[in-house]
Length: 193
Image (cartoon, rainbow, N blue to C red; front, side):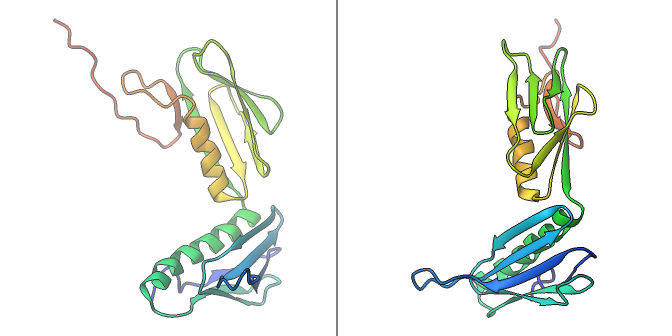
């Protein structure tokens, strides 16, 4: 049995979790559709076939248990993943997720255009506009920091990765956009004669 998959997920106060069987589409077998509502918003996800979710006391203070139909290899590999996805949904609607990016380089800066748009100066001949998808907001505490916030962990990480991809850190001077906890490996330049 998966050690991650069999661990129950506790439901914090103010969060409700519901699980219903997915609708049959042309005879396909599907897992449960899990809906999590909380102070941060609502998230919904369809789990893989054969993965079932049992909710004990769905109004808060209870727990969510993720179970698999059988012990086949495909079911075992999806058990822990499905439990982690549901746990991230519960944490997202109750606390939210954030990724912090740091801009390094002379003249490189970020400017907020509301909570859902950024304008980045990254050494190009033009500024680069970035618009947040639904459910994502930006904070710019200073010109060289960007905080991406949201309730969906996957979406927060993808938006942060898209921003980082605009100007990846280069190995010689370290200029570019990086995660706050990222370590950039530096290369030595040409050796002096």
